[in-house]
Amino acid sequence: MTADQKWKHRINLIGVWKNPDLGFEQRRDEIVRRLRASAWFRQAEEGGWLHQIVEELADSQSPDEFDGPWSAIYDEADADKVWIER
Image (cartoon, rainbow, N blue to C red):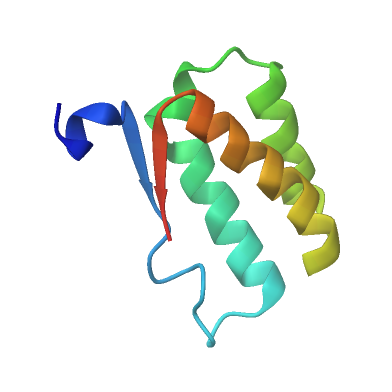
C-alpha cells in the first residue's frame, strides 16, 4: 500500500495555514470553508461529531479557542484516514 492509498480523503490547507498575510479570522474562515467543502465533511452525518467540531472551530474568537476544536478535528481526520495538508 502506498502512502496515497492509505488516505481516503485529502484536504489542502497549504497557502492558508501559515500565510502571514492572513489575519486570524481570515485564516479560520478559509480553513472552515475548505473543511466544509471537503468530501469528508459532506459525507459525515449532519449534526454529528465532525459537524459539531467544525462549527465550534468556526465560532472560535482567538487562536487559543481555535486550538481545542482544531486538535479534535485533526484526531478525527486521523481516525477517518483523512490527510490534512498544511
